[in-house]
Length: 140
Image (cartoon, rainbow, N blue to C red; front, side, top):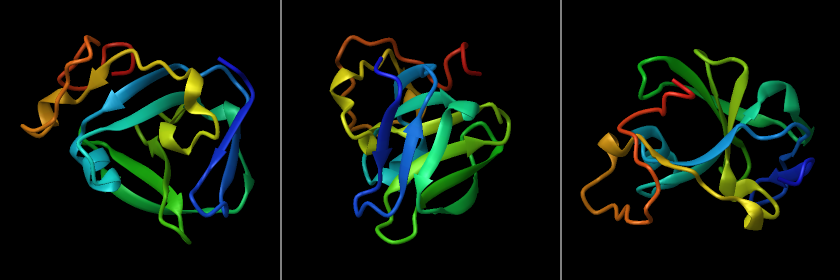
């Protein structure tokens, strides 16, 4: 994976840089991701919190209860509304970046689908990747 790499929102007001090796890339089907993306899925990347820095602009934050029952902060651009990342209270050392915000996502390779128990009936999950009803054991 090409570290460092950068990304940002649709309008360019919020920019970030990842300086540490990502922990994984998955496709999330939790109901919060569905609502935030208006889709049945959201490709996301887990990165160490210490390896994520915002280099331009500030995000707005929405506090919600996640699929695990724990609280989380969902960060988005206050100008264009693009979701940027999620900060789970239960895992303060991890940030979950929305993969669609990465400037060059051509190298991303998701390893699994997560929260498939929440996927709507019309979601086609037929790419052969492992499927987890919730979080995979490695993230918990």
